[in-house]
Image 1: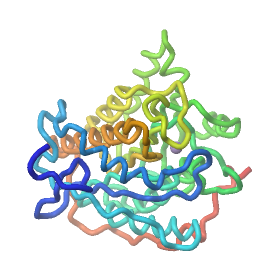
Image 2 (image 1 turned 90 degrees about the vertical axis):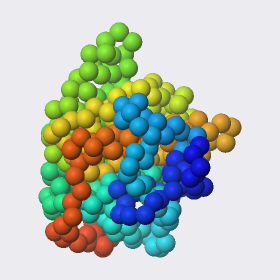
Image 3 (image 1 turned 180 degrees about the vertical axis):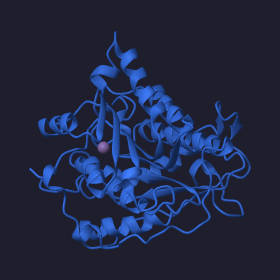
Image 4 (image 1 turned 135 degrees about the vertical axis):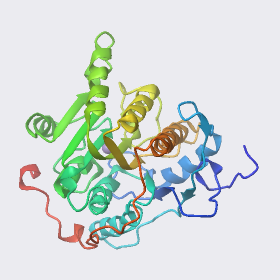
Length: 338
Ligand SMILES: [Mn+2]
């Protein structure tokens, strides 16, 4: 480790003087986790594990922060009394990092963080009030397209459907292998959704072609993108402590290839990313270290995109203010209510 190692900072990188280029934003949010628990401690565990991640990225050809100023923000914890009020609180917090002047990497916390982040992305200069321009690229074991789970429409199991309800225009998913009949129907009929199932991409004989089709999708995307990495998209052996580990998932290198391919696309601006469902593992740090390694890959790919002109900071203020009472009045779309 370098001399400037700072305890509690992602990768141990102290924030240097000047405007922030990259914000690592820990979100200790856990209200609806269905099976395991501990997701609210995950961001901190990921930051601790990142101390052991190498700063050198082979594609960047440099040590992070590679000339950028990275700030690890204080852990956000909701204080509002209701779930919906907490979602509004979270959206307001996220909006301050979605002004286009820096690249935010949110660390969760359960996947329920996604809809408020998407709501906050509405007035990012690249989105400019029209969320239908935005594509969400999701790695996940679960489709997260339920209309509700345990009567909660903002469950982590509904993160993708609520993001579409908020107004996101397109959803690309891979790693999917645990989903309901309702979700299968949704995938089949909703033209906004393109899903690559793990059954196909991980097939021992024909998986290579299916995986290449996923990469081709990423390469043909255009416009602003938010990348959401639910770590349970990876094979359960890599993330055994996550809330709902599932066998038959993506390899580490498939997650890396997804990130590299997405950020390399010259027609895409990745405006933000999140790594979620991180839970501290106590027998070995494998789960949080896997998350930290992929979070670091996201940062390295962002720095490369910035260096090669695919990401440019916006200096003009966003064109509108995020409605801080949005989720308190929110009704899910009729089509996704069971
Ligand atoms: Mn998920």
